[in-house]
Image 1: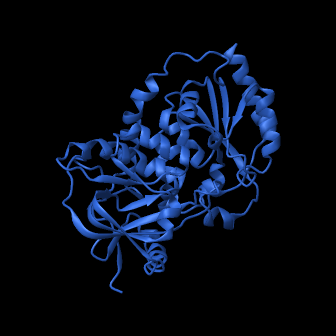
Image 2: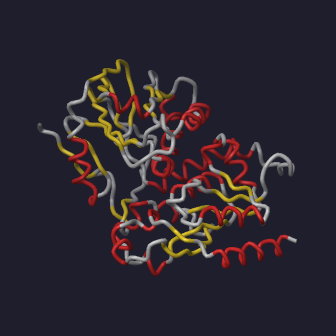
Image 3: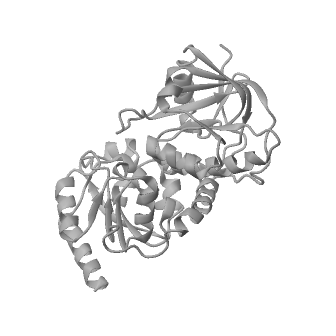
Length: 353
């Protein structure tokens, strides 16, 4: 009753994606009373105890989205959650208009903003705690380690889902653009990663890496692809099996890096400053997807590394013009041309000699 979901007025449009940059991210808004955090499930998670969710801050009956095409479905999804049990958090907090535990969007939209504001808020006389979320326990621990002590209030996705949380005194922070978030993220991470800049001994980390989720719904002939990489002395790594810090150091120093498309690339965006290969849907198929939606599903993140990503184009597992139009290119299951991949890996091997 009386609830509204509006587009964030702080974002302007650049092409097909809001890309406004906060003129001064150190400027902080005033406190508001009774800000409600309402959460719902969002896509799926491969980690059983860390569901994938979205959380919205409702201030004076209004929540704020950032993309017009999803405004209506977001409104109805949030509205269905408004009558959940209430939990109250006393004290002073800071929160963003939108949170998610989806790894790709968490890195691309929020992680840099968490790190930046966790330090900026500490300069206030009575600093509020920044409410945070993470896609896994290991990433939550990594985030806490990078931020000042007691600067965060980290809740699990399940805790967000169990109730609507009412913040009695809350500062609703402005939303950063993905590019500003990623830029601040790399700046904030650099001091930690530079400490590991000395080349790793051959026994301490892989020199050649293929990053993949080990899910066949991403790559139809995944087993054959993995075997081919191993035949060329690559380590096939699922990021969820490794600590974030160790993984980022390996990615940064690897002499050769290949990734499956989608959220997997966010691991490289965090730390990589050398070229790497990404298995992507053929442009003949991806060009059919509506151009106004292309950047809303992850394309904006990849554009941040446009000069480093070298695509390795693949065919879709199901050749369908209808699916080309309906599914974001990063959602399509791919079939890797094994002969073409072998040729590329052989060429890499010869150039490394």
